[in-house]
Image (tube, rainbow, N blue to C red; front, side, top):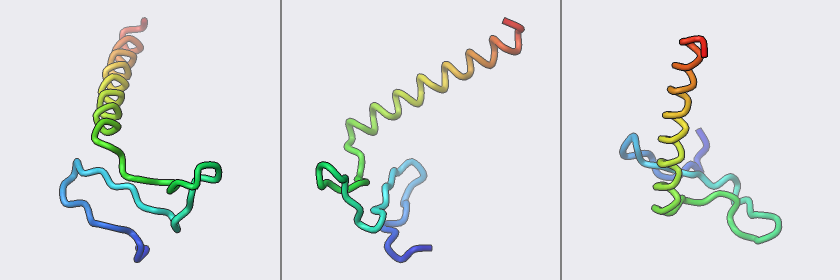
Length: 66
């Protein structure tokens, strides 16, 4: 693997984002990738939970012929 890949995951649920050749956003000059804030992680987890619930309900509806 690439030598620049930063810290190894210490726990399955730990989120890691790896810099890609130190690319920057073309308009803002900020890093193209970065660590998510705790608020962003919470929002992402909420979104994923809602999407998962929707998908389960949709699959159930389709199985029942609805």
